[in-house]
Length: 123
Image 1 (cartoon, helix red, strand yellow):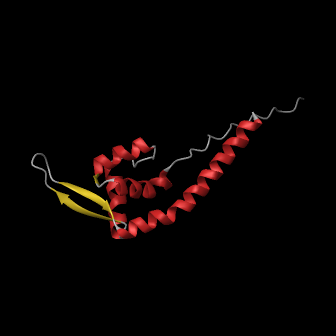
Image 2 (image 1 turned 90 degrees about the horizontal axis):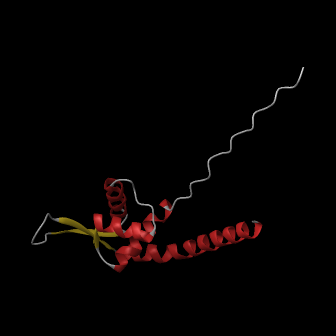
Image 3 (image 1 turned 45 degrees about the horizontal axis):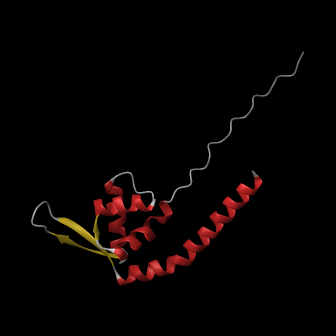
């Protein structure tokens, strides 16, 4: 009697490394460059390569939370044409938070570069 052949285990899915943790500093950085309304901000985040929430509602929830924390301010803009829009701006506290985030982002960049370099050397 032959021994049963064990099936080859399936490989786990590759880790999905996302930039979601970069959303808050990215929002602050973009608002430091210029005030923006939500749709414009969503587009600018995508251009930056930052994963944006799948719906505008997710982005607006993040902005509301950031406003509650004092990181951003907002006001209603009423253009001559089109609907009124809420425009977001970075606050002084947001500026300080962004500044404090930079060392952690620089450390993350060094770590990712190191990992990529080691991966490339092994292939």
